[in-house]
Length: 196
Figure 1: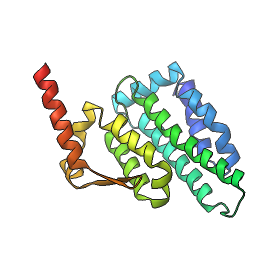
Figure 2 (figure 1 turned 30 degrees about the vertical axis):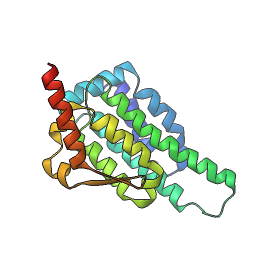
Figure 3 (figure 1 turned 180 degrees about the vertical axis):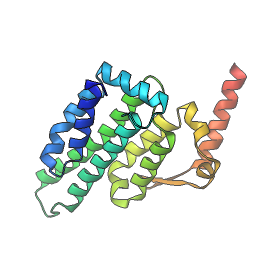
């Protein structure tokens, strides 16, 4: 394993640390490492080769999801009767967590779709199904769905017909039926085909 990937692996493990202060320290390092050219090159290479024994974008995404679960649980179990400024700082923390996910997806898929579509869909669906997360992370999940999943042609084929036809997504109180999205995508693909 390269030194750059080793640093990222250590950082990812620190994101899962039990102490919140340790996790917070690692977030900026994490952001820096997923932009480092050597790290990106190695993660791309390992993701493209589909070798599970090396650190790749999907493995890093799993670490990130564990971090989000820990932080969300920590914020959820914190005292509820606190000052307005504490409530504001908690809201800010939740926004930072949510924007970190979008940032990571952008970094991973910048050159080509490297993350598994199913993992992204599962993240969005699991996050929105949890009522306490739906309100907090709903708009970011909506953006991930629309901008990072449904806008990527490669992912269209990876979404099963069952997911298109059955799944409902409750985002900010608005129900989006995947069947409607499928019709829109079919119309767009027909338009693109005609234009070519």
